[in-house]
Image 1 (cartoon, rainbow, N blue to C red):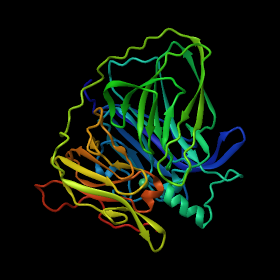
Image 2: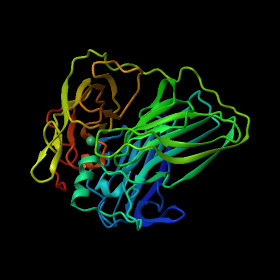
Image 3: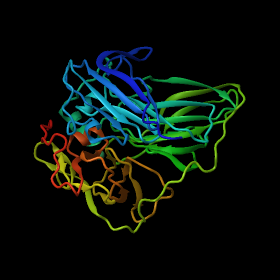
Length: 443
Ligand SMILES: [Cu+2]
């Protein structure tokens, strides 16, 4: 399909507070878009332009980040790239969606509050492929930490310290904003399920009983070939598209998360998110080719490292613990030049996991702890295991401006585990792009 740059799709998102029923007897004072958790699904075809007007009816500023979209810096939706949208004001985002895949949008302001309360939604970019499925569904995974009275409440000093250390995990498990939902599908069908982990900190370790399924896509779209598995890990921020089925009439099973130990004080638990019920059979038209696409390697495993980055924790006089990038909180990293291949070694020297997220660009993992990865994939979020090292390759294309990378555990991000950097045109000398202000972070 030829990219179509003439088609424009318009959306309006209004952020506000509203009552949201997560289940029969649980209603929360949610924050979200268009009175819904998640917000409306934003759909586009590869190459189209999205024009999205975001109105802020909250009582505090917000910005919207379009996670995974390779857009211009000024549209990235961080307080580094734009002025926050003040209460009562609006901002119009406008960008081309150059890649097909499962993406999402979410607040990038006071995230530990705004995202926890529901300010997020799915953004799906389609392209013409040879894959034919019987149906498609989106699963936005989240967990809310609620009091007995179904309120979002900051805990005491100790609980807040633990949340800073571990990230916030809740006991109200949501699929598309609902607890204990039931998914009904026909027997004999093959469906494409797009999973997005929008949790603050919870690692979602997808499991469908012992049923195998096929991974066909990750953050940056299709893999080269389907991969048959029985489980797959999604850190906060990550996406995966899987093919499920065909199942037999009368089958019933759970969408579960296996226990995953990310080395915090939270005890890993098996969790059930939703129930799938398989009804009467229906003829399938599904067709899944062996080869989904070709992914060209950006660099070989032994490519020379152009930058070293360190994720670590350190003592803090004020907070007990700080979350650091290159030994600093909320730091700046050196600029990168447009057109110069980046090979970054990202080390996690801490004893817990951190999902590394790069804004605005896909990368390829070319090495993890000395080993080449088992398959090629485009990623924007990747789990750094404790005491581990990865090598990633990515290419800064002609989108100069301010960008960032950070841990996608929201509490770690807030506690300092992030760095800004600039993409610059080496032929233009000093750049004057974006807002060069430093931040007034809540400490
Ligand atoms: Cu982290």
